[in-house]
Length: 595
Image 1: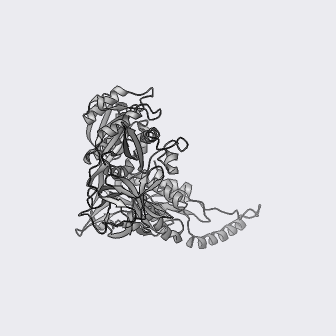
Image 2 (image 1 turned 90 degrees about the vertical axis):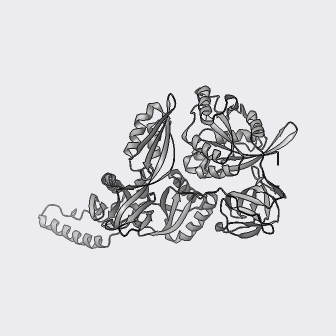
Image 3 (image 1 turned 120 degrees about the vertical axis):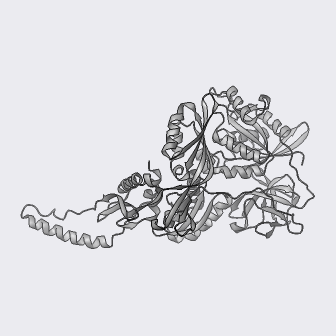
């Protein structure tokens, strides 16, 4: 066990974690030249297309130094704030972390929040400055920032270029020298932490775990503590580029177990695996349940696919434990699920994965956050979607969630950033200059305002330099109204939103204008209205498609034309009574892109 090192790589998005992982695998000859490709651990097509890491990936490397063989278990993590739960799980399975900082960008918001996650778990931090080969690198200034943040010495900071491989051997030596070996007792009862799982259509559910105490052998009779279900370990092994079976794994090892589990409900991330004959005293602590920030309805396009969608979401939840869901129904869309996500990117990725990995066609409703409503009878209820909002005369007070947001940006962009936050009803809490031209601004913002397009706008006004990190900071009273969209007098619950009273009129106006362009013309007029309660605040009309019935009347008396038009009018009237408007999927998505 003294020769095992478990570590993860943490950094802000685009600071070069996956590229550094590639170089470590190359230097230790874990991946042959033939198998080598860019971002070798990002095995999802989505990850390669977008150039981001979505899943943490575990891989084992062998490293020889001074006649000793070391086993290094590396977990590469995502950098985007929406996937911070992935990072927290990786950290729980490690003793040390490489904190990668881009020498051209310096420390950014996610760097700091990932660092705090690692420090809470008592990890040994090795600071690594990446991209030193670029002309725009500022090694001296960035080194000063790292020293201020960590309180380390200049000698402890390692410099490297993950692209060229310069400085990578020194990182491997530092991992061996600085990161402590895992603690644990091989003779104690088995205690293993499940930190991830994946569904395989041929083998059932494969769980990834880290053994804290004890020894696990093939065909052992094991039990998952929280579900109290027992299985036989049909196959155990370590995670190289592919899964490699082993006869035995001991304390400190990271590996996988296949035991023929078919139902996704039987495996929970953060659960503890132990032996049936000699169970451990208690489960491993320190795994908190995830708190979703954004809620949206996910519905199958074809209502017959409801059960298939449930199975798909359950399988996806195995691999992405931060996704939560519960059934709900909608008048316009039928049966579906109310899903909780960590952010808008997370929601987009889940929708994309459902389409690609499970061939599911889904409609996603307007995202919402959770509100607390105090009723006049003293009761307090949680509201997740507009249809759950009580009548206005029953409401005493509505509370909306606020976040504590930290924005790090260049001093040149401080004006536009503060204006953006003020426009979103933000309250400025603090300004702190990290260096002469980098500033950290702290705001309290309503989560409902941030959900839509805040991150995109922040990136564009700061030319991509601002970084953003947040955590939930309680609920505050607010003036919220339910904005409904009516088509020919019928409310479409998938398009209704809860919004701040001052924003309701402009949003209603824009939604009506947008829907007018998207809803196809019918044989009758379609009235699109935005309403708050019984008050209509905006209206647009999609004009009917008309056949020119008077074309055959040339010249002559006007009454002949009038007679034909009256006849057409009667037919249209009958039609309007049973008129049914089809709303295209693009209309639901366009509402998310309102400026």
